[in-house]
Length: 557
Ligand SMILES: [Zn+2]
Image 1 (cartoon, rainbow, N blue to C red):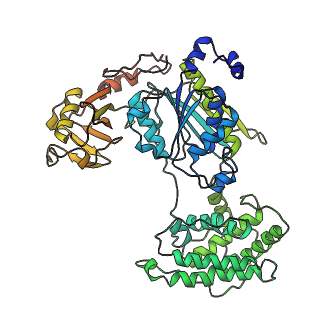
Image 2: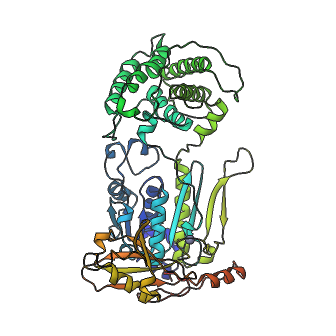
């Protein structure tokens, strides 16, 4: 790295650090909002080996913040376009970027072993949790990133400190398209519909909708609905425009939807609204409006928003925009009335609609930079300076954000189902190996009686002392494949479950390695009672087929 291009690194790194940097292999999982930023930063640092994984293709809605993508890229794989676009930041041909358009759960532990550092730039908890497990199996440090609107955080997990799964998380709320578009059953479904479907449909200039929900019963009816919108939107200058919308959405479309018998088996059919009398409501935002009051507010807000649209204003949903919020409240309430769902006050609807958090480019950029700072600290082996950095709300008004760095990472949570358990990687030919020899391999390494084992995969029982039907079956036929995670537990109450990461290999003899034995439950409890949280983390290099009784190992020296 004698290149002038990297002279800015001289203030950061010693010659030894630069040597390490020149050999560094980084895995970046996710090439979305944060991933694009991280990739650009990695390339500017001159990291020579970068692998990028992303399953998604580029959507038009990504373009406002995922800056490696432009309009001609829509529909193309994110990982590939990101790899190509990022070259404009650094054309150094020594940088090798490899991209994969696959699900992260398809990559086994052997793949993860190739890297020095893994960076997560993901948007869902399942994928994050899988990468966390793979990093623990292979002893790789994981830099975890995330943003929510103006807020965000970066955490560096490595062996000996809390893992990503130590803190239980709330499940993400997403709704199937069909629930939102045709069969809502809760107020939030109607609010999401009003905000994410009807508002953009009426007041934003959108490209042709891409309906991927191929098999749905209501596809034909949705197409008719679409054609209806197209016709109506040519009537923006018509004095009756808002009344025409009201009639189409809550009467005509509902009559058609209710006629799809298959959709309503065992469910109550929606009832079209037959009379559209309007009555002005009071100014009390906590009061739930009547049907007539909702009609009044709907007509008023559509009229106002349509005028703003015709004036050339670019409209987007903002919960603090009075017209937009009145529109979403009344539109969702009228839909709730049609489907006999409870209606909400303006105040309640505002908090529900506001919870749907936008992705913000500056937050992504800040969190990505923090990820790179973590990477630099890892490279310089400054583990005591690593931790979580939060992008949090500032307590003072009008100061939007505050960066706070929390230096100390807690020790692994002894109740964490994963990092407090035993674990190992097993390399086997899953077609040739039967369950019996697999259990024997694990039992001999973890010193328990094979007959006492209970073996599960994805919550499915494969073997226990009272169920031995599968012993002669091949692992593959039982659903144990490359990259599977198998859980083996024993009758010994002192022993944690054992997680086994499967690497399918036809070439090698069955082998088990990277064995981590958790201390038994009693010892752990005693340890945690006399715990000193500032304890130094001592670094031992993990070697293949080495038993490490303590979990305090790290790979970067
Ligand atoms: Zn954990």
